[in-house]
Image (tube, rainbow, N blue to C red):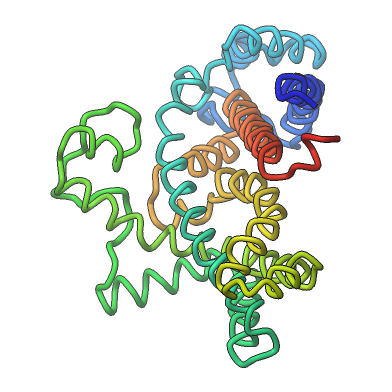
Length: 339
């Protein structure tokens, strides 16, 4: 199958998926048994019918549900996500402000999880049923099962407060100035500006939250890598490579790992989307000004435009992440190219 045809098919499949997500997200946001008027107007204004009616008219709450959806969909196609009820700013501007912090944390966490998970998975598969294998499997099970927010609290209490090995909450220290805004990623912006002290401090503040989220990711990746590599190492072509006298490390890394990582690549898109969407508690504990904290505040204030904006952002991230995975699949799995 040619590459362009493969990409066109994936894009066409994504269009009805995104449209369906808008319907589901809109219905869920409006099915919440709470009134944004009570959450956003002061108590003194709730008894004033004119103020309540003006508030409903301003935010389109007086329109039928299907009219609200069609209006939102039309605006969305024009790149307009509406105006936040809580901040009174365009939702798109709010997302641009908070998203870079989450992208920076999620990207660092997925890299940490990938490095640890693949390494542990290889060690566990090579030394199968050994004490090392049992230890890795226990650690992977703990990483998957242990609550992330509890691990974050323990990390802050022990590694930061008691031992002083890591930085505290926030993206930068109090005495460190922010780098000039280019991408919103402090590490990248500090690197571009040549502010090495800011770069070191930003990386230092990334260590603990990325380790916390990376432990969860590494547990999943380690288990998948181990099971996939064990299956590959029992294949005929692996036995043939060993019979040719090739070094064991070369057989495992070149012939075994390259095929065993196919399920891991599939998993990366989902895990990255989960990190971007599900780091609410971690961002709250580490005072990380990301999209998770913005979504939490929007939900507590019944800010429907912001809730819909975050929902669409998360859905878009999942679609793009899986599209990238499908694109990589075309190159790493020859069965797709010849299907």
